[in-house]
Length: 358
Image (cartoon, rainbow, N blue to C red; front, side):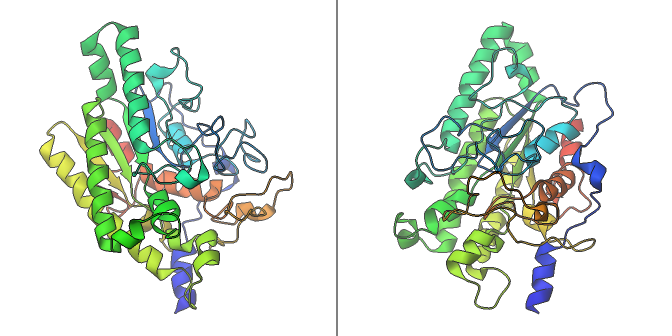
C-alpha cells in the first residue's frame, strides 16, 4: 500500500520530451499585456540576492540548466512562473523587483521572495525575506510608477485589469513557522485547523488587496504536499509511510479552506476573475514515467544545495532539485497543467489559458 501511495505522489504525466526543456510559443506577441508574480522561493527569480539571508540561491549548482546560469532561482532551470510566462507568449523572463526598471514595469514584475510567507514573522530566523504584505507594498509602488509614467488613469487601470497575476505562498508558514515549535509560538497557540483558518483569513485580505490595486485575473496556487519533500521526511520521519502524513494533513486543511475563499472573492467582486490552481492534484496524477524524490544536489543542513560545481544527472528524473524545491522537469509539468488543465480538479473555475480569454 505504501508503495502504491508513493507512486501516486511521484507519478506524473511524463509527456515531457527533450524538446520540452525549451518551450516554443508560436505567437507574435504576448496573450496579455503584463504578468505579475508573487510568492516564495518556488517563484523567486533573484529578489533575495541582495538580502542578508540564508535563503539564497545565487550560487552553483542552482541554475545549472538555466540559459543565464545562476540568477537566484531555487532550481536547476526555469521556475513554474518562468514557464507560464513562456506559455503566455512573453519572449523575456519577467524581471525581479530588485532589478526592474521603468522601461520594463509595464510588462510586469516578479516580487517573489524565498522564505517569505503570509504571516510577517514567517522565516524571520533565516534573515531577510519579503513577506506577502511587503510584496503588495512593492506592487503599490510599481502601480504608482505606472500611473506617473503613462499619465492616463483610465488607460493604466484598463492595462492592469488585463494582466495575469499569479500567487504561490503559504509553504513557509508551515515549514518555517508552524513546524518549528522551538522558534515560533504558532503551534503552541493553534491547532492545525485553527492555524489553517487564520492563515486563509489573512491570505483572503491580501488577495483582496491585490484586487484593490487593479488585479482582476488572479491565479491562486494551493500548497503542494510538503510532507513528501526530502527535507521534511529527513526531519520528521514517516513511520513507514511514503510521506509525513501529519504535514500533508495540515496542507489539505489549508487547501480545503483556500478554495472557497477564491470562490467568495469572485462572488463578492463582480469584475474579479480569481481561480484556484490545485498543485496537490497536479502532482499526484498517475500515468507515464515515475519521478524519484531523491534530491539532485548535495544538501546543506537546511535542505538547500551545498555550494559546488558538481551536478547530478538525476535531475532529469527527479521531482526535487534540493530538499524542498522542484526540478525543472517537475516545474514544466505543474506549469503546463496550470495553464491548460485536463481536469477541473487541477484548476477551478478555469485554468490560466481560459483566464487569459476572460
